Length: 292
Image (cartoon, rainbow, N blue to C red; front, side, top):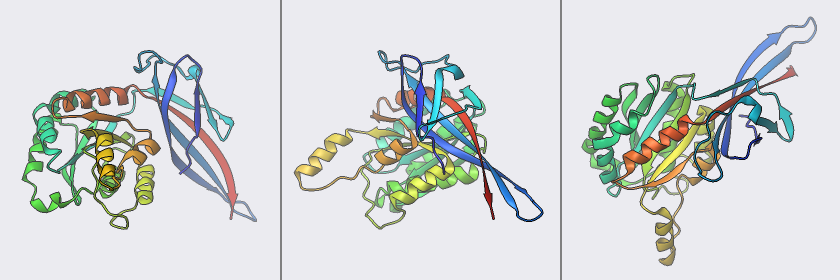
């Protein structure tokens, strides 16, 4: 997957992230002597723009406010929009004991946050511990998603015997790739304490996870229960290293990270959806030829 590496904004504001994904189309031109393959690559860049003073999303920008570069070379923007593509969201919920009170609160009040979505947006619900399980397939019915969070409490004890975040993200990316609306913006939103105990060499590696996320065109966002940095420091005092199970995936896919607790998870989820809706989408098309 090719990714644009730099996007400039020509107004007094900052872009906090941009992530690109590629869509390929190919045609084969048969020459009399030698076949030549023509390839066209559509690179989609998703950018969040915030004001410097308020750190709030900036709306109303146009294509003229953006300049797009790849490896120092200015690219032509062929399409530009804000909040036009539907969202396909995997809501990925941790079933560990420390997170379940927050999940229960999301069960009771999460419908308010999900109502921030537009009519064409779809949500799939997954639970994870030692493995990940689809609890609700993609649907545009917000009430069904909220109701199905109840099913997470009924899962057997075996899934709760660990917290394997890498495997969970891999399964979420795979589910997005095969089951979501192909014309949507794909998002994984996880609610977890980020205390992964997936050992190195167990299940899917970090590289495999990141490749799967990029292949699905997915952005990872995290609602982290509790103070993860404080937990890291406490483990360090005891001589243990606590792995950040999702920080790299959020950074590499241009996601958003927020700290939550049982009292504000619904409000933070609503705010996250609002920020996802405020992002700008720019496309550029590249063509090249190869010969066989």
